[in-house]
Length: 161
Ligand code: ADP
Image (cartoon, rainbow, N blue to C red; front, side, top):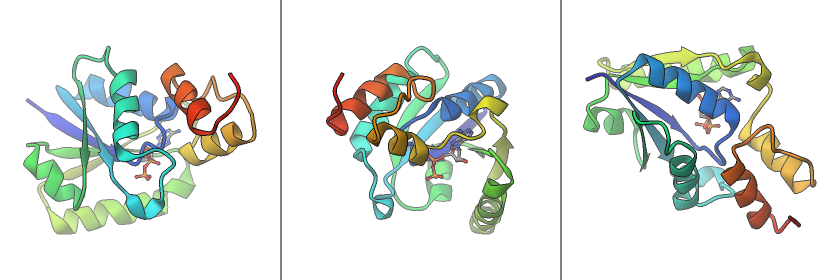
């Protein structure tokens, strides 16, 4: 059974993340979405909230599992019996950082490969940061995030329904 880990902050999950996830789910027997605690990034949603939103939005995907982790990604991946990590590449701007991260992870554990998947072009401009910004300013984020995330943003930011 081939397992891949899709790690990230998912603060919050967007349709871009879901697009990458669907592609990974077609390629692997099992995909574990691993929500990183990432407290240094001061996330809008708590770890438990981020994981719950991912869990709800992916409930209909039979080979997708939600988990969270703290500490080194490569250690978590090995512990879960996975052979690879999947990351999304939106634009050239993602490349530099992702390349560095992938090579560092390889240094830490040579057995684990990093795979990059490109989302549908309509999601290439989408980021959790921008979604939060637009929601804060009262903009419509319904085409960028699943409905449960939209509702959670409204509640968290005390926005009218
Ligand atoms: P991190 O804080 O680890 O970058 P994110 O939750 O922002 O976590 O992103 C997790 C992964 O999903 C990263 O590989 C990122 O490049 C990718 N990603 C984020 N937004 C999109 C998108 N719109 N389309 C495709 N991949 C994306």
